[in-house]
Image 1 (cartoon, rainbow, N blue to C red):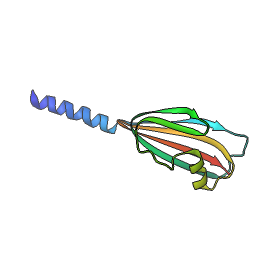
Image 2: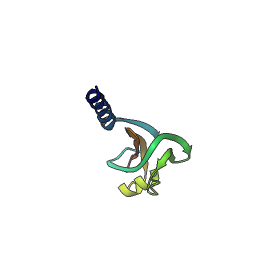
Image 3: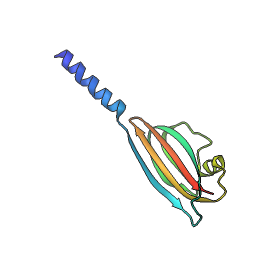
Image 4: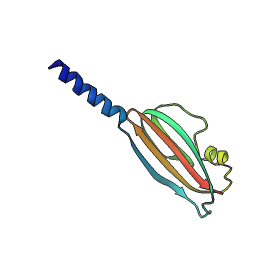
Length: 108
C-alpha cells in the first residue's frame, strides 16, 4: 500500500514538474512596417499572473519577480536596434510555479 502511494505521489509530482503552457498575445500594433528586426525582453516570476494594462508602455506582473531592470518595450527595441516599433506581443510561459513573461517587439 505504501509503495503504491509513494509511486502515485511521485507520478503526480513528476507531472507537475513537466507541466507547462505557453501563450502569445498581441499587446499593441502601429502603422509602422513590421521590418526584419525583432527584439525581446524577459522577466521571471514565481506565483505570478500578467497585468497587461499597468500603464503606458508597461507590462508588469504580480508575484515574486526577479525585477529585471531591462524588462520593457523600450529595452527590447533598443537591444534589437529598432527605432520604429511596429508590433508588441506578450509571450507568457507557465512552468508550474515559475512564469516567464517575454515582450517581443518587431519593427525597423
